[in-house]
Structure formats: structure tokens, C-alpha cells
Length: 70
Image (cartoon, rainbow, N blue to C red; front, side, top):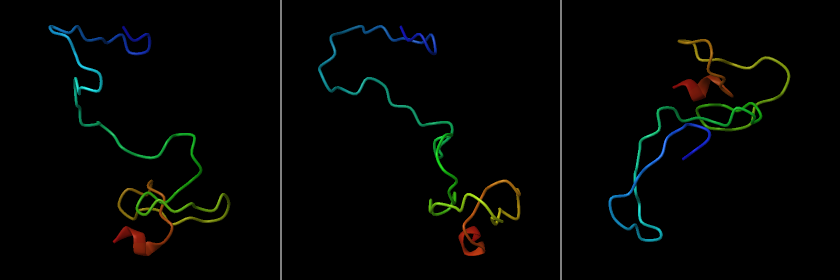
């Protein structure tokens, strides 16, 4: 049992080493929370200081340039 999420699986049969047991699509995909700022369109690093373009629709997503928005 996982101490982090309190979820676990119980096998009804023997499982071979390397056998896929479960495959889930992630709910959210993105950079690690502790990573340096990056453009969420092309994943280039962003400067630590100074103005940075943001998505014109949500005004949250950081971009390296207006070209990355299209």
C-alpha cells in the first residue's frame, strides 16, 4: 500500500516481471513545479527577470514570444 495516496492493487494472478498492470492517462501534464520558468508552448527557458509575454486568452500561461501563442 502506498503511504502517499492510500491506494493499492491486489493481484488475482501471478504477474510477470515487466508486465504492465495498469495504464492511466494523466489528468494534468506540465513542467515540474520546482523547475525554472519556461515557455509552455515550446519549453524554452524564460528569463528570470524582466517582462514575459503571457497567453492573451488566459493571461496566466508564460510564453517566450507572441509567435508561441499561435
